[in-house]
Length: 396
Image 1 (cartoon, rainbow, N blue to C red):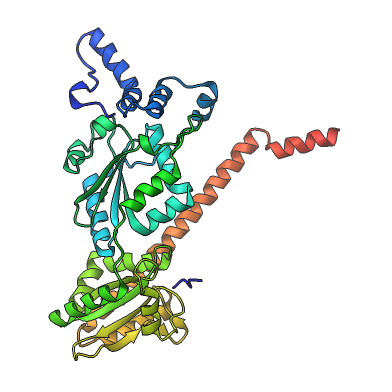
Image 2: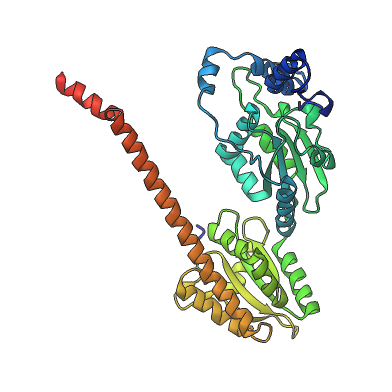
């Protein structure tokens, strides 16, 4: 399938929940006051003071707004170190940055920053194109502290949320407190999207020309006597991500890596990417992802096979016909792939489709069950509001 493009409390002052009654009470009060103390640890300009005050005193309107339970944005059970490692591997491959947002689910400003990431179009696009985001839960100052020290993230003094930017090798590019990214309008509790965007833009990776990426892949393929698996995608392309995720699976990567050098060209991010796609597809790509196997062994670049099948571009092979065409492509590379290896790849694609469809079926069943429960709840409560309104109107 394809798309057509048109402060945290220092360890020494953690709450204590044992000892005398006075100690227990003090520990309890400290635990309750943790969010306020965290905010108070932020730099105390006027905005930060307003934030600190808001953590301890809420006006009635704010209390009303805070009643609905917020959906957690931090996975409190996740292995943050593994999350960062996975993000670094992906970022290195695609010349992106890793953005760590240190925070916690109890932290209101962490939710506000995450809302800015999700709802502001410019910020959301910048993150999608240039960053791999990792949300790291620090609990109440008792989680992932060593990881924070590793990346020099001083959220213990600067408060939450706190941002760290890493390059693909794990080097720290920037650490940023977020009080300065908040709106200057004291009536608004939100982050300033333009300030956030300026920070993200300042620390994004320099773009690499598509031709340079391809040439590096060709040289590596010649030296290692492999083919080039050249594929084109873009950040917005869902089927491109599916292809890349499938290729990254350990059992798939092991087979592909023995026969191919993986070369990804981002048609949006790599200058010259669109032109390179048109050159190799001869203007007949039918959208992305589009891919081609190249053999550079003779000096000239030979096209072994590409993803344009009888019915057009197969993109990420999903249907039986698309998987069959991909199998033919693999057979064209039989000098580098065994029959068993080719079969394992096509079987993996079929298994992927079965998993995807099973997940969709489970999601649809869960949706239907939720709708049924909601309808039953309405019925038990005597009907919905629209029925009551209709009855009232009939009486009039």
